[in-house]
Amino acid sequence: MKSPFDLYSHYVTERKEVAPDWAECLSYLKTLDKPSVSQLLEKAEAAGEMLVQPRCGVGDQEAMLNLLQQLEQGAHPDILSLTIDAHTRLLRFEAADKALRDNPKHLNGYPLIAHGWQQGRKLNKAVRAPIEVRHGSPDARLLFGAALASGFSSFEGGGIGYNVPYCKDVPFADSLSYWRDIDQFSGDLADQGIIIDREFFGTLTAVLMPPSISIAIALLEAALAIQSGVQCLSLAYCQTGNFTQDIAALRALRKGIARYLPLHTKAYPVFHQFMGAFPADHIDANALIIYGTITARLGGATKIINKTHQEALGVPSVEANIAGISLTKAATSWIIGLLPLDMNAVEEEQYWIEREVAELIEPILGASDMIKAIVLAFADGRLDVPFSASIHARSDILPVRDTKGAIRFQRSGQLPFSEAVLQRNAQLTNEYKPTWGGELFHKIRSDILFFCRDLSLQQSESGR
Image 1 (cartoon, rainbow, N blue to C red):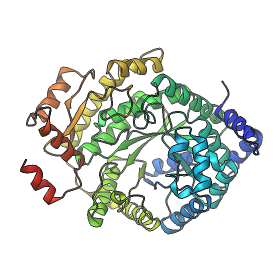
Image 2 (cartoon, helix red, strand yellow):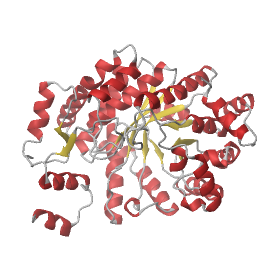
Image 3 (cartoon, rainbow, N blue to C red):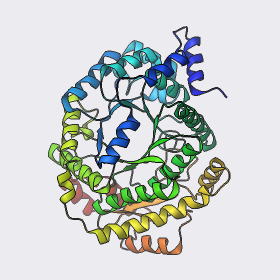
Image 4 (cartoon, one colour):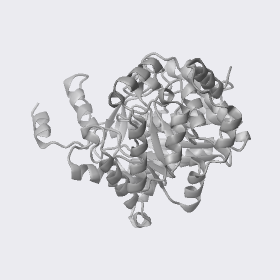
């Protein structure tokens, strides 16, 4: 099997464009005049600080360059993002090319492969902050080659997290194999002194995601990457909206890193501000951003991915993104650490999250062939993700919020939970005994719209 870089170089050659030279790219990566993402993560971890990173990606080259520069000049984010368009994510390169020629504004991200690695370098040189490539591709080998040639030092995704939320019919055996190639090449780069941060998208479908599911899958993908030699890992967790549960989950994630990954592994907890339905009201949206940042700070995240007050309205403006970064940075202050916490409640929640994670992943981590074990676990329902786009995940589990807004299992499907875990979830959801019809539908709908409080909607729902 050719390396991702070789695959990309071959693709560029077929297009009759200037193919990147590996020796030159290697030298370029080693001599970049900016810190790498891995260096920033290590420094922040040692100092007990939290890095801030926005999302951003547009189709046009000049617009993308200007966007990155404006964000850097206006808010000084620690890390910048290059979000890739949907055509490129799903290997529809000809469609991305056509959209780029016809009207780049029709693209929902930056088509790196269509633009090419030389344009990628122009973006990289235009800003001081390192850039991470964020996308959503089940097979990102060509994209990874382009990212390396461009000089980007962080690459998000994995064979589960970038399959389940985005693809209908990509078998896990295939996507996990594609990402193993990426991780093995990342390991080869590490042997040559080039550390690429590999981030895992624990957000998954971002809809009522039970913390143990998110953490379990992030840890499994990280364990696979380590087997391939990856030396810097970021494991992401998405805010659920319950203060105690989210703090406990971040601490459980850090504990899982220490427990399940090899000693001295450089792995960092990452926190996504709320990924669900955002309030349209400007003040409420800003309050949710502050709430998420305080949660991340107290939970011990090393990096946070921020949102904006325009999240409910569509693609945010540059000004809104700058405001979101600035608001997030303000809420990372050490002063937040002075806020009192109910540590008994956090520790109890953390205990149960860790127990659920252990019951999900320990049989798989002990397998001689982890990829095969993961594929079989999804087929049997011993691993599962709610509201999955993929037919290869059963989506036989049903999460709901309890009376305090924490996410619990109303139905756990075939997940291999112990009787104690099942009884606790049953107890915490005991008041919810809806029929499998309209009543349950409105309960789940209400839980999804947890932060979108509309009094008229609530009144109409309660009158049903």
